[in-house]
Amino acid sequence: MVSMMEKLLENKAAPTTPPAIPLPAPDPYGDLVGDLPTFCYDDDDTTFKDWFRRYGPVINDRGSSLPDERNLLLDKLERHAYKTYSDYVLPQEPRHIDLAATVDKLTKLFGPKQTLIRRRFEFLQITCEPLTTSHVPYRDFSNKIKKKLRMLQ
Image (tube, rainbow, N blue to C red; front, side, top):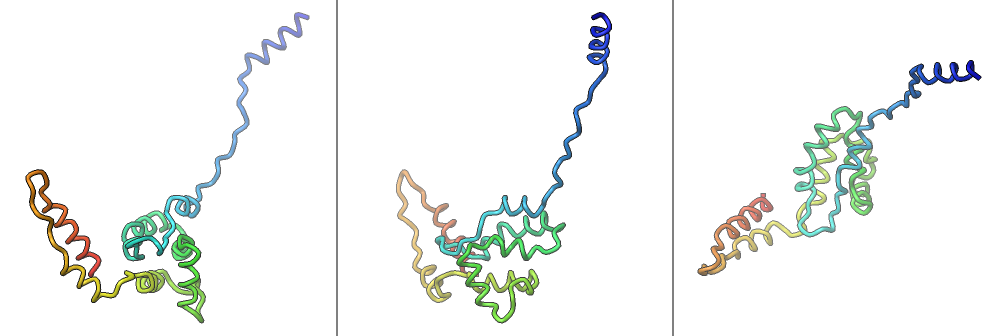
């Protein structure tokens, strides 16, 4: 009995290390796919140019280690937008077009829904709200003008 107690104490005193669990390898593609929102052209006033202006630097910076950033960009198109783009580039396959050409074609294809003439006309029709004692509308008016100017460019 004493020998069994000694063995138990020896086993208890001996440091035991748990087996090392290997950490999963970092997956930059999966991280980016999860972090970036999907581009949906049906949303109001959403153009590919605006979406890429916001998320393009993220794709270029964090996706620089990827073998092909174009695939990430195509994965972030919603189903209808991808079908429209793939039909637009026929007879080529979307995977055979480089990133710069893909961005250029998507910008042209998913631009503003109104014509340039219509957007200019609406820009010229903008008026400032009247000044009241409780509301000074100049900041809102200037922000509206800046937004419309960005859309015209």
